[in-house]
Length: 511
Image (cartoon, rainbow, N blue to C red):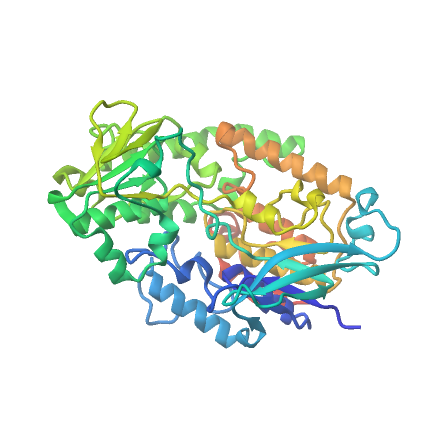
């Protein structure tokens, strides 16, 4: 009997999952809560563009069109590229739009007790003879419509990390947004507006942005460019991060090759590999310090007290990548963008009071660019309280059978890493290999966490795929699938050339 597979979400990870498992002979159903594909790329602010070079942010078997000559395409070009991919591989007929998955529940037939299994799903293979997922689907356009329940053999969650459930800080009573006379919104709501509506909202207004990662600095720069010095934009943040020019991030990605990975400790490494990393680690330290010195020289960091307290290696290891918007410090210099570092703040009637100043910051609009409650979003989709405790951002969780998660982990080039994992998953579903025991999988996770914490320290994030070992990670994926991980044609290229999606072209087609 044909196995029924569902993909939840039609962002980039959902499209990749659907395409790759279709090539293995499956007929997946894709549930998408919105009316179109693209995920976060379908709702962006006007100035958004890729912060990863397009050579690293592309589908391995579907190149960017020749008309896109920019190294960092804008949001419209990215959306056109995503749509072209979905049309080319005939994914759109598989998608059921405006179908919101409200709950998934694992059901066992018989008296089995899956928490006691030694092997994933009881067998180590993708499908179980006794277990199924019940997926509850609601019409997103009509909450009163009756729900439908689908019984499926495997579920792939591609629900996105940066959407739906915004993270807004809590405030003491009478010191939160309820006492503020202006407008308060999250960057998610701002990005969802049409460009002209967003422009009208902030035009000639005093705007304050909360946060200091990609959305925060992008919105702040865009508002400052629009309103100028007459209505300056204020950016409030707790922690200064390294925000780098786009070409610097491109250079960083291109410098990650097999040779640089010799400088980095690896999970479960033997003595020789450990010794090699110890001997070469001074080179890594030199590279990082030269990069920090360059950024301090090219940007007025000391002048505006914007030198981060942590090193660039810690930030890179924790998958925090923010590209400096064009003319960012020019706007600071002229006064249209005001930078304020503060550990806490509260609302008042006319604006915000930060901990280091007695005079309130008068403002008309406050935009929280403070991220999303991704763990809570992932937890809420499970009906079982047992699974809700198994929060994971790994592709496969040892304790959650017949389910995979794609697109929830961070990396320097998320499309690239998600595609590799979708290829791996397609091979697994096709029965090309079996998973290790649950104990072995859990031990492997602990080894990776220990390795990543060694570099990221207190900035460690569970969701971060090792940013310093992208080739090593892909090597493990290739080995699982039975392919040669050495993709270059000659030794020097293998050692010193970067690996890009092109190096894994048509990998899923190989048997």
